[in-house]
Amino acid sequence: MARPTPLSGFPEWLPGERVVEQHVLDELRRTFELHGFAGIETRAVEPLDQLLRKGETSKEVYVLRRLQETDDAPTRGHREAEKGLGLHFDLTVPFARYVLENAGHLAFPFRRYQIQKVWRGERPQDGRFREFVQADIDVVGSGELPYHYEVELPLVIADAFAALAGVGVPPVRILVNNRRVVEGFARGVGLADVDAVRDAEIVETELLLADLEILRKTLEKRRKEWQTNPKASTGDRERLEHYLELLKEGVPLRSVRPDRDALQEMKGLGLLTGKPILYVANVGEQELGKGSLPALADLARLGPGADEEAIVVPVSAKIEWELMQLEPDERLMRSIEEKIDITDARKDDFRREIMNFIGHLALEGKKFTYETNDRLRRALEMKLFEDQKDSIKLSSFVSNVIDKETQDKIDIIKNRLIKYFGYNEASATDVLAYVASIFARGDVKE
Image 1 (cartoon, rainbow, N blue to C red):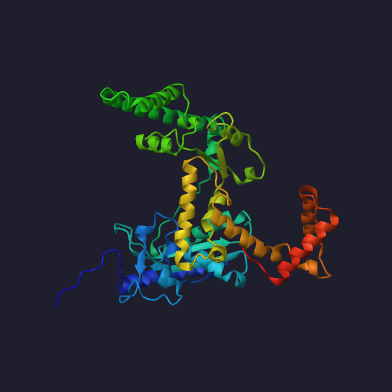
Image 2 (cartoon, rainbow, N blue to C red):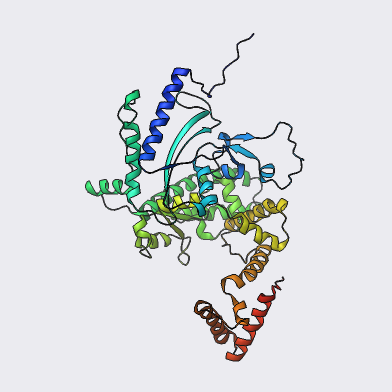
């Protein structure tokens, strides 16, 4: 009988090695539980659309499907048959889903540990496997977590490693990184505070120089072609030479407000200063609540022209983490799409259509609002109209009991009708009562 070839990256331990592995896992469980963490175990598979949300992980996911499954097999309403399943490559995605699904049954802050196998479809090498056990601890809160958890978690990890000294694990050193450490070092050696405007201007200068070199080479090549047909190339020559003069004066090409054709031309030439610009400023959490920051206002003034500010988005490590934890509200999106008869089978096409539309507007330097796309506008307005009976409770108008919060909202609407739309007290009350009767009947139509 031929000896089977072992699969690379899928380790199998001998009995003695398995004893050591079990000891390590038992020590980790004991340490985590002594610190008040509860153990959980999640399923091995997750929907592919959730696993692939980070984008660059697609090559790492092992896809799961039945051998006899065919593409045209009836879905019977099963989400996994429609979306596909994959083995999880870490424990973050399944834990986020677990918390969302069981939030009503968990006590927050929820301290959890999880020790499970994960699978990654990467090239095996020293210290890297396709199948391995991952040990993970996290604390999740329903709001903002106290800062002491940032200190507690490294201490738990240190205790876990110390407990493994008996099996030969050497002492470990945990390195903690924080942006304030770098800023403190800079101040300690006499450097000024980080200057966002200066850094942005340095990058802009580098882009201007790169575009200038590209345009000079392009004009040098084109001039030889234009000699053979000077009349046909007049417009191109004048436009490119105008771009060159702007760059020489240190003016980015976005200042000319390029239209879609001009943007495509600049993209084809590899010119970077013609693209719309967005500044993402990383600030500390304590700075976010201070309102307008001088440095961000200075950045905004680096816009495409004197009369137009650049878009500046302040972010922090906390915001980035919270954004990563957000899950799309599928139920909400479907409730909106159904208002304009978007079926479940066509929802992805509709969402791609909206995203492509937003990207197209961005290329033209235009802003997107819900009113920009007529189909999305109609869907949102119908959804909002339907939901008003739950948020404003105008239907209470037809009853004799109105709570203060609802009355305040009704008064706001009534005052706006009087102030901006020419109603008087009696007519505003009548029209609100009529709308309330529609909500009460549930007659919500397009």
